[in-house]
Amino acid sequence: MTPRIVVTGLGVTSAIGIGVRQFWEAALAGRSGVSKLSAFESMPMEAYRSQVAGQIHDFAVGQYLVGPLAERVDRFAQFAMVATKEAVADSALQLGREDPYRIGVMVGAGMGGMVIAEPEYHRVYQALRPNRVVPNFIPEVTLNSASGALAIMCGAKGPNLTISTACSSSAHAIGLARDAIRAGRADVVIAAGADASIVPLTFGGFCSLRALSTTFNDSPEKASRAFSRTRDGFVMGEGAGALILESLDHARKRDARIYAEVAAYAATSEAHHMVVPREDGLEIANTMSMALRNARLRPGQVDYINAHATSTPIGDVVEIRAIKHLFQRRANQVAINATKSLMGHTLGAAGALAGIVCALTVDSGLIHPTLNYDDPDPDCALPGISRRAQERSVQVALLNAFGFGSNNATVVFKRCLT
Amino acid sequence: MTADTDVALRVREALAQYLKRDVATIKPSDSLRDDLGLDSLATIELLYQIEEAFDVEIPDTDLPSLVTVADVTTYLQGRTTQAPPGAAKPNLPSR
Image 1 (cartoon, each protein chain N blue to C red):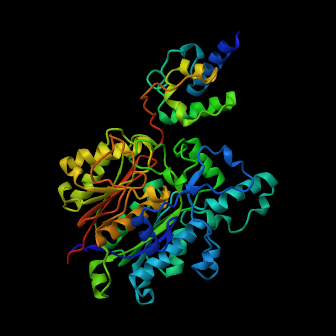
Image 2 (cartoon, each protein chain N blue to C red):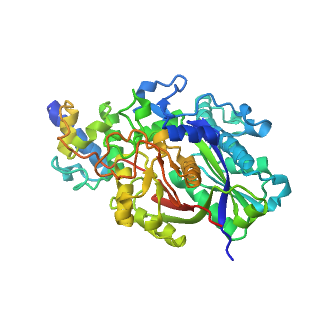
Image 3 (cartoon, one colour):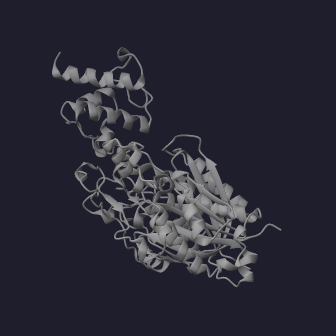
């Protein structure tokens, strides 16, 4: 019999809190983690169109981890390590008692080690001394440095993969972690997502792409405003999330706390455009529909959707269009929120952080508010979106995540009824 | 050649270079999207080149007014154009 997969541990490194408790309290209270963009040394900051970001200020990895490994990886991998340490502790797994070859790691990352990459590029071209590139450059910049570091930290010798599909990366990490356990390749998989790319070149690249909010530079906490009439682009964020996935049998044997079951996962490509979704929303609707069919659930059974909802003019309306198309009248009853309204868009970490929110919401019945939803766009407005926290029984939750490269993912969580 | 027509020609030349077409085939009345086939990302790339060529910065809020080649020319000649009331924002990158 194919095993059922459950979530038994959570960990967060975010702009609204390091640690799940702090993160969840801030989310339910509707506290924003978006602030004025910190200065990039001597860079003329006024030249950036967008000047707001969801940054984790004053992060010092030594406060959370000891040993040389954490000091020798990029910021995004440090975020992942901190989140994973918490998730493992939260799960109460005794890693030393597990078969190490049955513990896997799946990490979603969009950009990789940009914090070391950018200044090093600059130095080598400026000094013209290619023989003085720092020796640890390649190990730190490599996209799978985070999944490698997590394996070393946890002694996890099972499947170790990095998934990079831009903003949907770690939704796929959760889905593929589930698949790996169902296929019998692991008993436990650490599913994580991480990104830390608020650095001069990458941030400038997103500005040039005109993807970021520009009209709320003087009121940063208002800039990430999914479904609002005045939304004008996403806010760049950073962070990491980690979830411990294991088979229900494995969790039961050790009497683990179960947050939620990961009931299904669907992955598609729109095969349409590198950075813009199909306007009719049919591909997104199809992705959600496939995931629900895989879970043997009907749209009418869905109670809550953690929307991708980046606060871009086209993205939000297309997702709502897709929800209305698939859910019909149920679209007026399902609760929907935008986690990115709290801390901006954390790119490769977004799926994992949304997955954590789904697990906590299924577990608690609490739905965090969507910040700045004070001027609803008539094309996005649905009764289940609220700028206040909601409470209701959530049996089934969907996580939507979409990435550049025409990439879509939906993960289905449900209450674990045994 | 007047300054105004110089701007018009430079805009058409920038488009011709971007599209790899003969400048004579690009008319002021051409719509960037419907006639020249520029999608949102291509429009942003073109405007990036025009910003470089004319040493200007075109804010996102001005994009809705730039529908035709002539609109771009007029905009550059004095940034006098305003987005018509209710003009939809273009489909900027979103994921």
